[in-house]
Amino acid sequence: MKIFLTGATGYIGSRVLPALTAAGHSVTALVRKCSVRGAGVTPVVGDMRDRDTVRQLAGEADAVIALATPGDATSAAADDDFVGAVLAGLRPGATLVRTGGIWVYGDGDGITEEKPLDAPAIVAWREAVDRRALTAPGIRSLLIEPGIVYGYGAGIPAMFFGNRAEVRLVGPGAQHWTTVHVDDLAELYVAALTLGAAGERFIAVGGDNPTVREMGAAASRRLGLDGRVVPEDAAATVERLGDFGAALLLNQQASGEKARRELSWKPTRPSLLEELASGPYDPV
Image 1 (cartoon, rainbow, N blue to C red):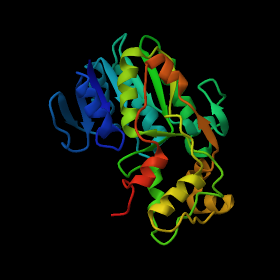
Image 2: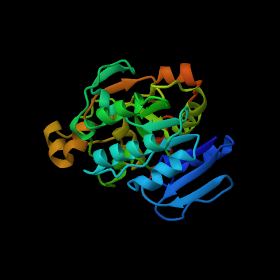
Image 3: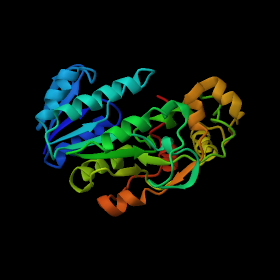
């Protein structure tokens, strides 16, 4: 396939790009500077907010994989505009694979794609944009919803190593986080291109749901602190981190069974606790 990819230089996109080319796809990557290279990759310098460029590149592609986001207060408007430009450009029968996140489901012990949405404030805007894309006529539109992404010492879990003297938890630490290794996630995007049905959502998690206290203790041991952690009152977490902190306080567990069943996805990488304990997240 000819793929139009945004976010190719980001944490997830930098793993999705080589997974796509390894699977034989050709990729046009929209980047802010010409920083991606390789066989099967064509960089185009631009921005996801450039509607004309986005519309043109979408029209030239068999599929669009959207990974870019401003990650700030402009995210809702930027994502909505991007979806509009893509839908205006895609030819009938083409594919749009968007990236969401499991936070939109709120708290839950066995979250599936059928759970009613209960999004915290930081991602409450997603529902309208997701619905617009998933119900767009004439194309095959899919939504990938990752849990906490980890691997290579990056992502949200790196916060546990921010202070060598102590490991401060996000809240009291009893809440579970759903997790997925970034390389397993990259393979899911590739699988969705060929096997995903139109209008479907896929929760992207590896099935390990450690508590924040377990993660903090693993980091503490790695830092030579004998597993000692410093819990934090939930209200203090929200005061310190705002809406982001409120999302990190969600208690979520999920298996990602639908993606395994319908996309033949088989996550195989080490769990987050194994990664925290084995060195990739050690401070430099």
